[in-house]
Amino acid sequence: MYKIKRETAYPLSYNLGSIFKNPTGLSAGKLIDEYGLKGYEYKTVKVCNTHANIILCNKNSTSEDFLKLIEIIKQKVKIKTNINLELEIVIY
Image (cartoon, rainbow, N blue to C red):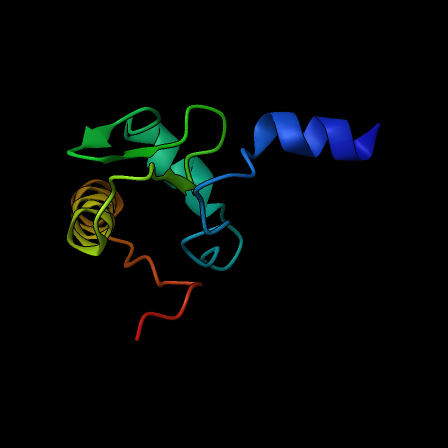
């Protein structure tokens, strides 16, 4: 049951899991969602419709598109909330 629920909420293909750390006492996904970014698309990548802290890619996605969407999200959340989202993933 838990596995099915998780697979429904968090698409398993073409994503890296949670992108941002949760700020103390807050949810990064909720902050992103409150700005209305669920489903937001930038070229070949998009914010997941079911969990705003996940970015979905496809076989044509580029790292440039992925990194640009991360920056867009960070900027919009910062403008609205004055919170700097920190990455949970490591980018080399």
